[in-house]
Amino acid sequence: MDNVKFHITVKGIVIYRHQVLILKRTRPSSDGLGYWELPGGGLEYGETPHEALIRELKEETGLDIKILKPVYTFTAIRPNYQTVGIGFLCVPTNNHVQISHEHTEYKFVNSNELLDYVDKKIYNDIITTLKEYETLHLKD
Image (cartoon, rainbow, N blue to C red; front, top):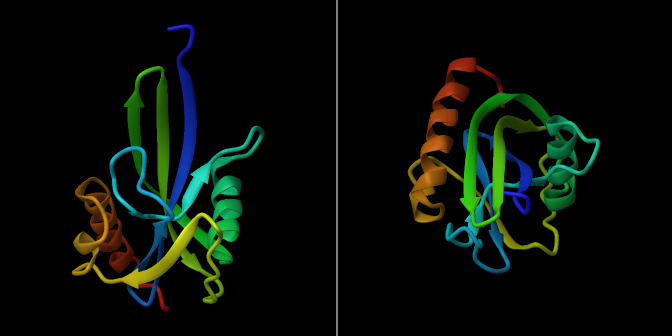
């Protein structure tokens, strides 16, 4: 176990007009989850999860966000490497998406369209979060 590494990552379920922001990667995920993903990324040393998510969303999408709350956790275990992640419910404070070189496309999709793009492992967390978002009665 001396060579085991841990990686902490954050993902944003960014909801705008009752739709979720997804990004298309330049190549498929190494976890076998396909091309489409939620925005986010790894923590840098010294960052809090909130700081990392705000930075990653700005880098990947150009969006400024308001984090409403953490909504789920996940883990991916590979030989000698484990990722632990936190998913956050967020809303953008601006709506001009400008994707980075890491992605080729973005979409805001509704719950009926999600399974056409994201893996079922991600889908279930997003649907649960959308239901929770609807109970908050926020204005878009």
